[in-house]
Amino acid sequence: MEILEECCSPLLVDPISPTDADTLAAGFKVLSDPVRLRLLSLIANTPGGEVCACDLSEPVGRSQPTVSHHLSILAGAGLVEREQRGKWAWYKVVPERVEVLRDALSVTVLD
Image (cartoon, rainbow, N blue to C red):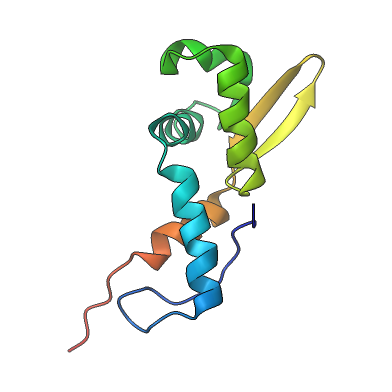
């Protein structure tokens, strides 16, 4: 999975290059899964900004192996960072990576 980095201007301002389109599509594809989108939201909205993987199974209603799989995909896309603490992994959102996707969809009104 290609890690999202600043790549392009908003989609509605200028046409994007094929390379930028591929990069953005990969990021949006990662978030097109409802479980991954929910996980990203839960992590982003956790007080302190980070959460143990052990605390994410119940809120999304999935087994720990399934949650770990989805977290691995989010980390591979650069949307979350993983830190191992003992036997548990802790996750936090990488705001600048999420902003790339948000900014690509931002609308600029031209007079």
